[in-house]
Image (cartoon, rainbow, N blue to C red; front, side, top):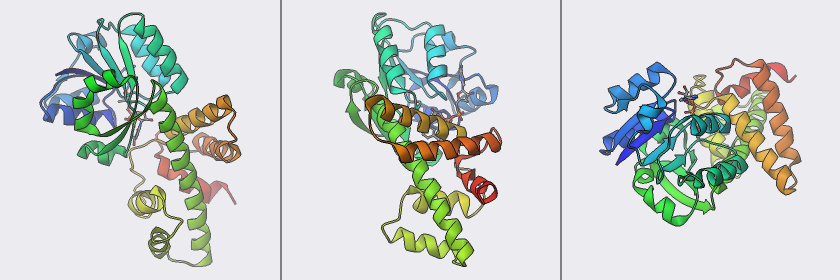
Length: 284
Ligand code: NAD
């Protein structure tokens, strides 16, 4: 299958490389030359511009930072009628719905298929993929998704993006409160590794105690590959969604406000696991 892959960053890089290894003809484009070179090194075709990547591709995968960038790409590229565009970015569900309906007028189908699992599971093809769209449209891209992970249909178009944002609100809030518990335990004199071992056998465990703390925070590498600002974007999508549907979300707003303060004080490129250093320094 000829696949155009737009956005070859931390996630799109390893995902596009997997499609190449599975035998697909992958034509990738990214504004960053190093990202294009990495695809060429992996055996794909690095396109010189967006339209060169889109030419002859019946399937277009987007792995971009946000809905703003997704819309810019959709409005500037030439998409042939019959094309299926798969937005695997963590985008805004209502903007995805609006975009899908305007593309449908041009005979182009948009489905959403955001992911969870981070860079490690992008490399191994074990992502959790949450899809939104008509079952027949999702069936057409099933061979592509199967190379990347396990897909579950969440509902109509935009539903994947909704559940993804809600997942990340959970993930970020778990991480914040795990950092608070770990710092309190540390100041009491507890050993961090022992605390994690006990939490992981108890009801306080989460992705933060099982993965983020032991793999990126305790070793002080802070290299999960997921930016702090990307997480903030997702938290804002989730709290806006809760507000739009009239669901109560006081904790979500509190966590998002704290996260926004951290984003203002940490470096532009900070990994989301660096939130612990902000808490340590900025919250007395
Ligand atoms: P990233 O910043 O590493 O990659 C995004 C890529 O898009 C960059 O290489 C950038 O150069 C490129 N880009 C930006 N504007 C472009 C344009 N106009 N045309 C072409 N390329 C353009 O981000 P990432 O970590 O790969 O995340 C991508 C998406 O996946 C985000 O929506 C993020 O929220 C989501 N996500 C990330 C992770 C993770 O662990 N990193 C996990 C799940 C979901």
